[in-house]
Image (cartoon, rainbow, N blue to C red; front, side):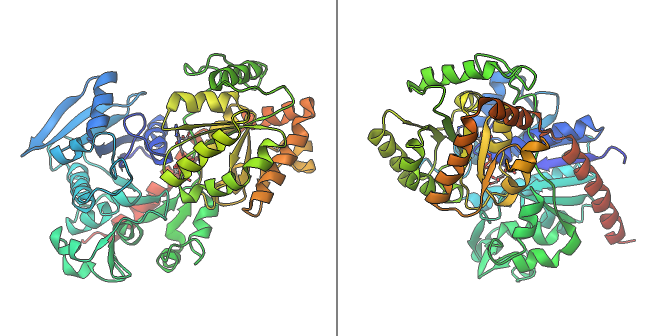
Length: 488
Ligand code: ADP
Ligand code: GLC
């Protein structure tokens, strides 16, 4: 494998803008590819909030401008070059990349992300004269769905890879959008961008890229079925071997219990005892009381239908009566936010809900909790369970998607051979959630066995290195395909 020039195109990148796991992947994967010798770079929109943060951490240089649009350049920690495409419209979005504070999508999303894709293609082809041309353009989620479309329309020879982080967000617009964006009529076809009489941006990625990936092997299988295919299972199944699952990793430097500036104590698999202190600090911070025999159960995540927070709320009494305390960190749907606030009012001795996005508190929660509950209806990969394991917090997860693949259930055999890292449950019902936590609770009552489980969870290799190599091999294949498709 030789080193390739790879342009990652993503709508959010940690730490400049993050609403979920996509941002973490768009930051960590390019870094891991660079460590393998590739010249990976990232392009994201220059929202006002992102620019403010970029300027607070380092130099931001202007590298090109045309009309009121500007291309700015900075570096991610570790040195990966990051381009920000700034226009007055993106700048105006401030802290809200996709919709307003109430969650209503911005009315100009189609225009903005079409424009973003065109800029990605211009960059990949060095139309801006920066002296860099991409071998591979790697787009993420619907926001980058039109990248492979514009690559083909512009006959740019770079290979294209498209990653589905979540098929439930397809980027749908009315069909009239097609002409408004100046896209050719033939794209309005079911074998192109048309989807149930709408224009689907994600289909651009699924149909026109040289390779399609998603973020776990299990989810790659699930999305080829009507159950999880969101109506696109036929399109995906038709890609055959071009669709692959490559499981996510995490940035093990940013998520490191031995050196985490957000956490008051340090610990690791060799010295796990510091975790007890992190737990005490967390209880003090949240003003909760829990004896050593009462586990601290955490939930960290978007408050969205996907995440099963409705089931968590229905299971709440059963959970706190185990007994356990429950600490929730999340933001999202107002009804779920209200439900959590009410749960806290009802059980102030056992429940805390922090509504909002708070990276520092997330770190302290992963560090101080004993268990992490992940009741997602579906989960393409999930990063919260990986973060939790790294800090010796035992994930209790619904057996679906990436959760099924990354957490090894603590059956007797798995505990005996040291592979166990958490608990899984099959059905997503309040009863099953409580029963799974009760299984964890029973083991929690046996401190030595619990410590063994903690240590094997902490020893799990969640780094990006293996998956980055898998992407490298996929780029080889995508480039091969592209070369064969090029006109003589
Ligand atoms: P998704 O991408 O579907 O939201 P993931 O589990 O892949 O789910 O990634 C979520 C990421 O966002 C994790 O790094 C998690 O710690 C973080 N996160 C989610 N909600 C919050 C929040 N309210 N405050 C801080 N971090 C959060
Ligand atoms: C999506 C998925 C999540 C995944 C993340 C990063 O937001 O919901 O499961 O971990 O993307 O790939």
